[in-house]
Figure (cartoon, rainbow, N blue to C red):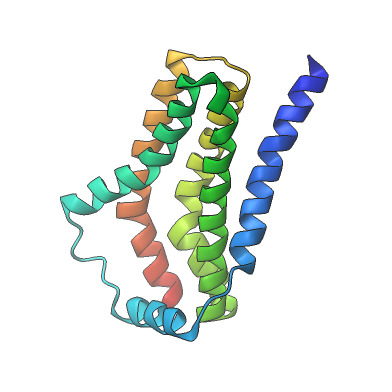
Length: 169
């Protein structure tokens, strides 16, 4: 039991770690950096719409749905590791882009824009993936996942823009 647990946790940690590393190492062109700097210069927290919360719910809900979908097909349950890898890669890429665009303030900008919600949602993705791999399905896990998606979306739409604006300006 312990050896199996260690192997599964190692696969999850490797998926997260490699995703972050490859996201950070992904090349960024000057055009993309210029558009990010332009976005930050014109960024406003005044016009938050209902569409923004809908987009955020989709952004955090889709990976969770994909992980759950892997549970439906026992032969594909390890494909949930790929979903975890892609989310980590996206997170690493966005953080490295912020650092390249804003220098030392870029790390703080990345934490302000992406940090809080990902501190909540990434462990949920990892724990759900672990449970999918070991073929354990629990309705409470689904409820916790949905709660985390809603909480991460609220943070992204209502809190992170204000923190980002404070760091960038």
